Amino acid sequence: MDELADLKKKDFEECKGQVFRIAVESDEIDDDFSLQLCQVEPLKSENEKRESFSVVFKGPKQPVLQQAAIPLRNESLGEVTIFLVPVGQDKESTIYEAVFN
Image 1 (cartoon, rainbow, N blue to C red):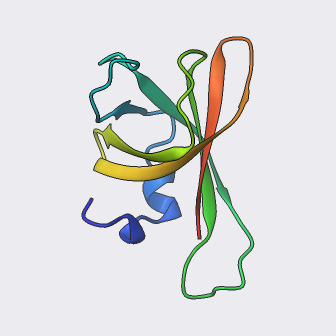
Image 2: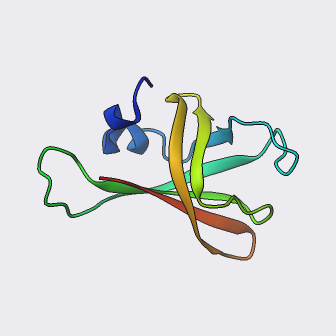
């Protein structure tokens, strides 16, 4: 994908359930660290020119990624940098959200 601004809700809906791998090297993060796209939800917006939506990913419980712009690789979308925010945890996972508006 060329530009983050070009991504649409539909692009992510087509990737629901797919794996997104971290595209950076780090001592804290394994090469096989991945996130699974779980939800794609529309958001209300006053900006009629741009579609607003959120995407929710599940990742391993540890390590927890800090809120940041994270480069991710996906089979369908290629490499995209998405601003992810950790929003919670369950028994096995850390939940991350990205908002597009």
